[in-house]
Length: 165
Image (cartoon, rainbow, N blue to C red):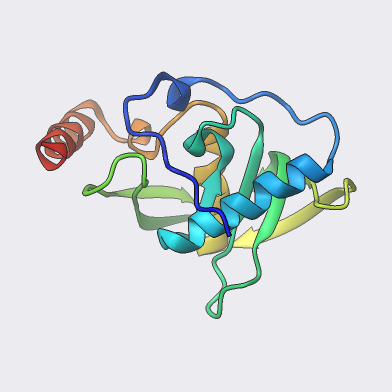
């Protein structure tokens, strides 16, 4: 079990788009395992590789009630999203102590490479969909608070700085 350190905001890697994964190898599978261990230790419902300083388009998501059902994704891409939105309080281990209510599509269809290296398309709904979209934002060099208006984002970042000191 390896728990990796999450990069502290404002590390530049959190603003850098991750590189595509060419093939699923044992090394990639080992990174996913570390990511799941790290996600469970937070505890959280998802983690993207750039959050731990690995600049690859890798994400894990587990919004199951009993846990232990993590979906491992390489190069995830949203194909379809619902018109209906869902609000959820989102946070990040990269910026502890703060959270914000974010509105995202309630359901998404995502294409990704799975842990066997096969292309998979899967529908995610509710918290699963929120987490997948949150992780894809990380892979694109974005944070959840980028979805807030300027005033709310500035207030959140001020509060985070107070929490860090």
